[in-house]
Length: 280
Image (cartoon, rainbow, N blue to C red):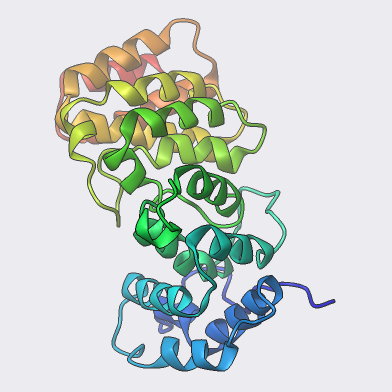
């Protein structure tokens, strides 16, 4: 039986090698091979041809969306059946949280596919696809990240999505825990801004408080960056949050505080500088 594989990719961004190189024809051919494992009737040649057509001038995110369109065209319907094929095509979940390399970006089209289609009732024969989509993102984030694909769910169905995130924030897998913080960042780079959380970040505070002392730096760094996002629009809230976290803070939590307030400190916000000094 064939095994899903990741295509070869650099361990880090290389000078002179564009980021788009991780989503070129070799990766598309490997994706076709993997999807053929999940769906015995998958038309690999047609998928490869559609994915490669017009690929060259596209950015990395545009390539992911373009390939996702080809996935939609060639995967079985309805959406829930396509997701079954996708899940069967995944490589083993990652254990490590450092030195992940560029190979995991192979899964950008998968995330784009869920981002674009995961709330479409018609595409799922009129059946609510929410639970199917959330289960798929739970698995995908263990291999790449679902921080981009989760955002339409937060925007469209915030209460329902946060209830899931409040469960996932206690998950034993650090990739899942990080998703709860990173995916709900109001101003996540490369991603759609979540206007409701820019206006009122309260729904995320429960997640940040839960994860501020996480065992994994991978997760704690996300918490710090999330607080940094909040500080851009609600400086006083971010300052009070960090001030409260100072009480009984471990050296790891103090790092979170310092990292979270580094930009206000650079801007000359006195209280941010004072809190960072106390967190040394």
